Image (cartoon, rainbow, N blue to C red; front, side, top):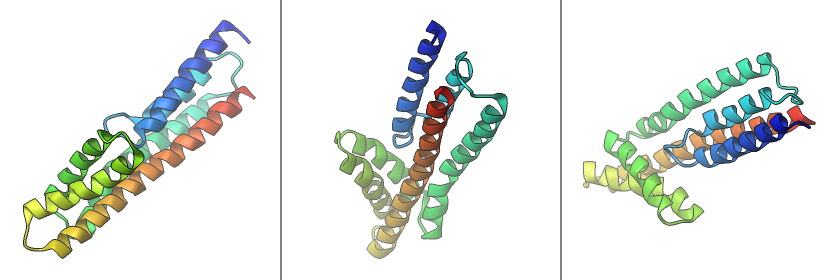
Length: 162
Protein backbone atom coordinates (compact mmCIF):
# COMPACT_ATOMS: atom_id res chain seq x y z
CA UNK A 1 0.00 0.00 0.00
CA UNK A 2 1.35 3.41 -0.96
CA UNK A 3 1.35 6.61 1.04
CA UNK A 4 -1.34 7.99 -1.28
CA UNK A 5 -3.54 4.96 -0.49
CA UNK A 6 -3.17 5.57 3.23
CA UNK A 7 -3.90 9.30 2.92
CA UNK A 8 -6.98 8.65 0.75
CA UNK A 9 -8.26 6.00 3.17
CA UNK A 10 -7.87 8.39 6.12
CA UNK A 11 -9.41 11.39 4.35
CA UNK A 12 -12.18 9.24 2.84
CA UNK A 13 -12.95 7.68 6.23
CA UNK A 14 -13.18 11.13 7.83
CA UNK A 15 -15.54 12.28 5.07
CA UNK A 16 -17.71 9.21 5.64
CA UNK A 17 -17.76 9.69 9.42
CA UNK A 18 -18.66 13.37 9.23
CA UNK A 19 -21.14 12.54 6.47
CA UNK A 20 -22.99 10.04 8.67
CA UNK A 21 -23.25 12.70 11.38
CA UNK A 22 -24.45 15.14 8.73
CA UNK A 23 -27.25 12.77 7.75
CA UNK A 24 -28.89 13.56 11.09
CA UNK A 25 -27.71 17.10 11.80
CA UNK A 26 -29.04 19.77 9.45
CA UNK A 27 -26.45 22.12 8.03
CA UNK A 28 -23.90 19.39 7.35
CA UNK A 29 -24.19 17.95 3.84
CA UNK A 30 -24.26 14.31 4.95
CA UNK A 31 -24.77 12.45 1.69
CA UNK A 32 -22.39 14.67 -0.34
CA UNK A 33 -19.70 14.23 2.31
CA UNK A 34 -20.12 10.46 2.13
CA UNK A 35 -19.84 10.72 -1.65
CA UNK A 36 -16.60 12.71 -1.15
CA UNK A 37 -15.31 9.68 0.75
CA UNK A 38 -15.98 7.56 -2.33
CA UNK A 39 -14.22 10.17 -4.44
CA UNK A 40 -11.18 9.80 -2.20
CA UNK A 41 -11.21 6.06 -2.82
CA UNK A 42 -11.24 6.74 -6.56
CA UNK A 43 -7.90 8.55 -6.29
CA UNK A 44 -6.26 5.80 -4.25
CA UNK A 45 -4.09 3.65 -6.53
CA UNK A 46 -5.11 0.34 -4.87
CA UNK A 47 -8.85 1.09 -4.99
CA UNK A 48 -11.27 -0.58 -7.40
CA UNK A 49 -13.60 2.46 -7.57
CA UNK A 50 -14.28 3.44 -11.18
CA UNK A 51 -16.02 6.21 -13.12
CA UNK A 52 -19.26 4.27 -13.45
CA UNK A 53 -19.57 3.93 -9.68
CA UNK A 54 -18.85 7.65 -9.21
CA UNK A 55 -21.47 8.66 -11.79
CA UNK A 56 -24.14 6.36 -10.32
CA UNK A 57 -23.41 7.47 -6.75
CA UNK A 58 -23.42 11.12 -7.87
CA UNK A 59 -26.92 10.68 -9.27
CA UNK A 60 -28.04 8.85 -6.12
CA UNK A 61 -26.59 11.65 -3.96
CA UNK A 62 -28.42 14.34 -5.95
CA UNK A 63 -31.73 12.46 -5.82
CA UNK A 64 -31.44 11.75 -2.07
CA UNK A 65 -30.58 15.38 -1.29
CA UNK A 66 -33.52 16.65 -3.36
CA UNK A 67 -35.87 14.20 -1.66
CA UNK A 68 -34.49 15.12 1.76
CA UNK A 69 -35.38 18.75 1.12
CA UNK A 70 -38.94 18.01 0.02
CA UNK A 71 -40.05 15.05 2.17
CA UNK A 72 -40.49 16.95 5.47
CA UNK A 73 -42.51 19.70 3.75
CA UNK A 74 -44.65 17.15 1.93
CA UNK A 75 -45.36 15.29 5.16
CA UNK A 76 -46.21 18.51 7.00
CA UNK A 77 -48.48 19.69 4.16
CA UNK A 78 -50.19 16.27 4.07
CA UNK A 79 -51.17 16.77 7.69
CA UNK A 80 -52.49 20.25 6.99
CA UNK A 81 -49.53 21.91 8.66
CA UNK A 82 -48.35 25.44 8.10
CA UNK A 83 -45.02 26.99 7.19
CA UNK A 84 -44.67 27.85 10.89
CA UNK A 85 -44.68 24.13 11.71
CA UNK A 86 -41.95 23.45 9.17
CA UNK A 87 -39.85 26.32 10.49
CA UNK A 88 -40.47 25.19 14.07
CA UNK A 89 -39.36 21.68 13.17
CA UNK A 90 -36.08 22.99 11.77
CA UNK A 91 -35.49 25.16 14.83
CA UNK A 92 -36.32 22.14 17.00
CA UNK A 93 -33.59 20.09 15.34
CA UNK A 94 -30.98 22.70 16.24
CA UNK A 95 -32.38 23.11 19.75
CA UNK A 96 -32.29 19.34 20.18
CA UNK A 97 -28.59 19.35 19.34
CA UNK A 98 -27.88 21.43 22.43
CA UNK A 99 -29.23 18.68 24.67
CA UNK A 100 -26.23 16.58 23.74
CA UNK A 101 -28.17 13.35 23.37
CA UNK A 102 -30.06 11.44 20.71
CA UNK A 103 -33.39 11.90 22.49
CA UNK A 104 -33.09 15.68 22.12
CA UNK A 105 -32.25 15.35 18.44
CA UNK A 106 -35.28 13.11 17.91
CA UNK A 107 -37.76 15.09 20.03
CA UNK A 108 -36.54 18.51 18.88
CA UNK A 109 -38.25 18.45 15.46
CA UNK A 110 -41.52 17.24 16.96
CA UNK A 111 -41.60 19.82 19.77
CA UNK A 112 -40.43 22.57 17.42
CA UNK A 113 -43.18 21.78 14.92
CA UNK A 114 -45.75 21.62 17.70
CA UNK A 115 -44.67 25.03 19.03
CA UNK A 116 -44.65 26.49 15.51
CA UNK A 117 -48.15 25.20 14.81
CA UNK A 118 -49.47 26.46 18.15
CA UNK A 119 -47.96 29.89 17.50
CA UNK A 120 -49.61 29.87 14.07
CA UNK A 121 -53.00 28.73 15.41
CA UNK A 122 -53.21 28.22 19.17
CA UNK A 123 -56.93 27.37 19.06
CA UNK A 124 -56.55 23.92 17.46
CA UNK A 125 -54.23 21.69 19.50
CA UNK A 126 -55.34 18.50 17.71
CA UNK A 127 -54.35 19.89 14.30
CA UNK A 128 -51.05 21.14 15.72
CA UNK A 129 -50.32 17.73 17.23
CA UNK A 130 -51.14 15.97 13.96
CA UNK A 131 -48.96 18.36 11.98
CA UNK A 132 -46.10 18.02 14.45
CA UNK A 133 -46.33 14.23 14.24
CA UNK A 134 -46.15 14.32 10.46
CA UNK A 135 -43.28 16.83 10.53
CA UNK A 136 -41.41 14.47 12.84
CA UNK A 137 -42.15 11.55 10.52
CA UNK A 138 -40.85 13.62 7.59
CA UNK A 139 -37.63 14.38 9.46
CA UNK A 140 -37.15 10.72 10.36
CA UNK A 141 -37.89 9.61 6.79
CA UNK A 142 -35.46 12.09 5.25
CA UNK A 143 -32.73 11.29 7.77
CA UNK A 144 -33.35 7.57 7.35
CA UNK A 145 -33.03 7.81 3.59
CA UNK A 146 -29.74 9.69 3.97
CA UNK A 147 -28.44 7.19 6.55
CA UNK A 148 -29.27 4.22 4.31
CA UNK A 149 -27.46 5.92 1.44
CA UNK A 150 -24.48 6.66 3.71
CA UNK A 151 -24.38 3.02 4.82
CA UNK A 152 -24.29 1.85 1.20
CA UNK A 153 -21.50 4.34 0.43
CA UNK A 154 -19.51 3.06 3.43
CA UNK A 155 -19.86 -0.53 2.17
CA UNK A 156 -18.76 0.56 -1.31
CA UNK A 157 -15.79 2.41 0.18
CA UNK A 158 -14.68 -0.64 2.18
CA UNK A 159 -15.22 -3.00 -0.78
CA UNK A 160 -13.10 -0.79 -3.01
CA UNK A 161 -10.03 -1.64 -0.93
CA UNK A 162 -10.70 -5.36 -0.41
